[in-house]
Length: 142
Image 1 (cartoon, rainbow, N blue to C red):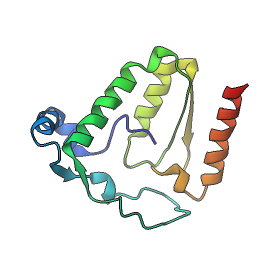
Image 2: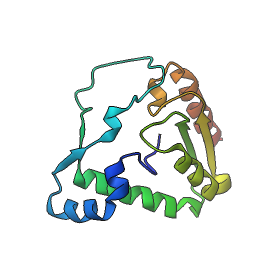
Image 3: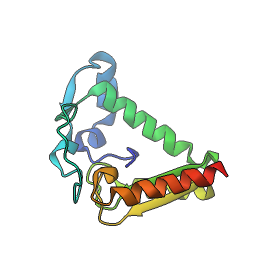
Image 4: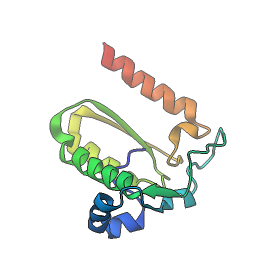
């Protein structure tokens, strides 16, 4: 699921402050609210991932927010994209992905996976998600 708009309230409410502080304290970490919500509705695989933790550095957060803004501003450039998200994503706001798809028009194939969360490829329906991606990629090679 794309980080086009996050549910992280600190970033949403204090983005200018986070950008400013990231230049001074890039490694300072803030709470990553995403870790406090379920990433999957029906997890198929649950490997222990030591890289998942409750913090995000100000630099990473500010950079991802900047990148999301740039992606949205350039949605209509006509680059082909297959964009998908779960409708129960509690980390990245699904309506932002739909907004991107609307701005991108025909160059974007958009799929909102009903009943899936943020980590669509870790859900029990992961094979369906992966098959859809492969089908789109195969179509791009023709």
